[in-house]
Image (spheres, rainbow, N blue to C red):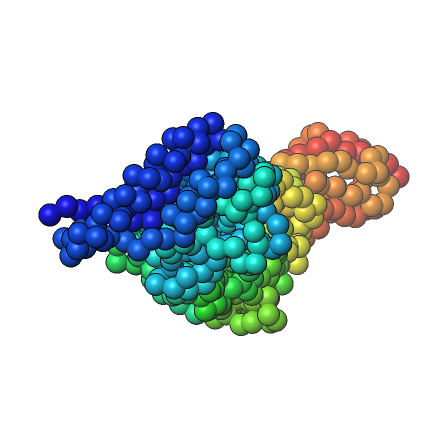
Amino acid sequence: MIVINYPESLMTIPIKRTLPSVALTIIYCLVSTIFIHAQNNSISDNIQLFPQSDTVAKIVDSVFNQTPDADSIPVVMAITTTTPDGTYGIGKTITFQIIFDQIVHVSGGSPVLQLNIAGRAVNASYTSGDSTNTLAFSYTVNRGDTIDRLDYATADALQMNGATVRGSRGPQAVLTLPVPGSPGSVSAQSLIVIDGNPPPAPVITVPGSNAVFTQREMMISGLAEPNTLVTIYIDGKVLATVTTDASGSWTTIVTSTAIADGNHNLRATATDMAGNVSPQSTGVPVITDLTLPGAMSVVMLSANKNPAFATIGDVITVYFSVDDLIDLPVITIGGNPATVTALGPKEYVARHTVSVNDADGQVPFRIIFRDLHGNAGDTIITTTDNSKVFIDKRPPAVTLNTIEASPFRSAFLVYISFSEAIADFDLSYLRVTNATISDLNSISNNVMTVLVTPMYDGPVTLDLAANAAHDAAGNPSQASEQLLVQALFGGYFEKVYPNPATSVMRLQFTGTVNEKATITMVSFRGVVVYEKELFMDSKTLTLDVSNIPSGAYIVTIRSKNYSFYTNVMVVH
């Protein structure tokens, strides 16, 4: 069997102006002879023939009407694309170039190049090429366009669409292209995939609606079309991008310092390999609060008359104000949970009543607080104004001492020592017998001295009654032990006056003896001229010498505890 296969694509015979007319005639004769011979010998059943096409007619016409080296018919030499291999989505442009064997001129309209997309023909638009040998076409991918390997529709895909394409001398061009898929076609040269279907909107699964972020790291997860690029937006601004896995899942952790505290909205889009962008996802409202609450004022005081001290029954108060809305803070005072009360949206007080179980000393406190979104402020253990409260439940003890030796023959100092600082004290708090007290002097805040002056010979007592003085916390003092000393003034004769005396003679002492004494006046010859028992209840003894003869005498005073003498003269 003889097969002569000359489809239209193979009948596109380049005609060069330089081809001699004799050669053209020979070619035509050969083709015609084969065709006629086949018909006359009835062998058409054994030869695969294609109907004589317009191409053959045009060739024949050009042979018989050719003017040598002038206006040969333009034919397509090649069709190409400058668009790289890849997948192209909505809005992307694919370009084509149809190259002729000579310069062509386009007039009367715009030719189109029919493309095969998803089994339907669409037109690539003519963009340029008039008066050149290359006509350019372009096609912009539309929504719904889909094909795994792009090619034009048929070998006749180059359509005039009302236009004419001619050579320089006027003959119309032969527009036949290689059969789609055959060597020389677009699909044989390039792998261009068209995907005009955008992916569905992603779904944000994490975080949930109205979630609160209190850390700078924000985890966002969701689902989208597999192997797409998910773009996450916050308030319309790009926050992050992440690629989905083969199952369509995606997760990203965003660390951002540029997100202000407050309410925000998260959305996402998915972009497939063709560059198609999905609709935005449903918005997810979230709240960011990265600012830690802080204390503005912290003050501690006691209901005691001295607010820096507290004793049993006193209420200690901690005042606390903060710069943000917070949950009710947890406050301990002295290790004890305190009763907390809100004074306002950002002000609180905590109170604790001192009991016997509270330890003496500076009172510690602790404030633990969080804002409404869970941000924990720094634990507070100090006041902002340096205020402090000290618990003092112990009554101050007191001792009375003197460093001088008893018996005392003159005034002496007594030291009053308390076990702690005393807030109030005066001489009226002391109880004294057989003496007077004066000259209260503070050596320190818990030690003072007082001058004790005995009145008579004999015991002198001094003590401080219970509850007489108070410490800084108001605790009343304990009773002191009684200080007991002896006073003895007999050896301290000071003077006699007048001397000589005529009627009255006075003996003066430095202290009060406060006991009976025998006074004797004896002459230098040993004659007793005066003897009398007197009670020495003052510092001066008065003798009546008006009946004593003039002369020099020795006056002797004898009592239980002492005796002394002096020389005197009586003159009348």
